[in-house]
Each structure stands twice: as C-alpha cells, then as structure tokens.
Amino acid sequence: GRTPLHLAALKGSIEAVKILLKYGADVNARNNSNWTPLHWAINHSIALLLMDHGANVDALSANVDQICDYGTPLFVASKENRLEHALLLISFDANVNAVHNGKSALSVAAERGHLDMVKLLVE
Image 1 (spheres, rainbow, N blue to C red):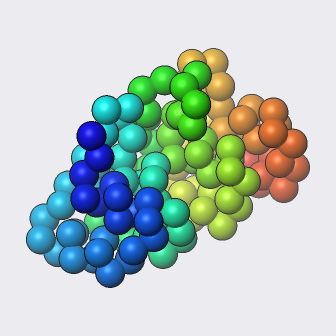
Image 2 (cartoon, rainbow, N blue to C red):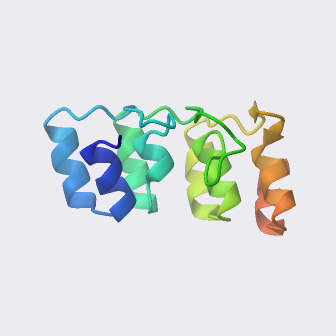
C-alpha cells in the first residue's frame, strides 16, 4: 500500500510532506507497484522537497506495461508532458537514458507526441 508520504505527494500537500519528512518518513518508501513518493509528486515544489531529502531520481517502478506505470519518475514526467518536473529531475542527475522494459523517457514522450519533451530529452 501507499504510505502517508505517498498520499501527501499525490494530493499536493506540501505542508503534510514537510511534517512527514521532519518526523522521519522514508522518502524512498515503495508501494505495491514499487512507486516512491517522487513518482507520485504532483507538483514541482513537492518533487524538489523530496529530492532535497534524498529521493532516488532513478527509482524504477514494477512494470512499465501497467497502466500508469512508466519506470522512473522521469518516465512519469515524460508521459504527462511535465516539462518543469523533467527539468528538475534532470538537474538532480536523473538518467535520461534509462531503459525499462524496452522503453525510455524519450520513447514515452515520442509515443505521446510531446514534442517539447522530446526536444528536452535529446538536448
């Protein structure tokens, strides 16, 4: 299941994320699909806070073929065309060339027609 930190990241509650981290929540905790709170982070500020607390930017989820399951947090940003989020992940040295089940962040962006994301990932 999901931890309170997963849920706070998903709901976009930065104050809840701050409190949970302050009291020792595991920033790299995994749910049943191996998603971390960073996979679930709904906004830039929460993603930054999680990464500042040591979130693994290259954490792989369980299966790239599951609905809503696209490997690393960068795969998720590519799928959802979240450029600002992708830039932040890259600034924290996310592996833009990671391949999971035959897919990469670039292939995910290309499949979905996210041209600005494709440009970002090839530069």
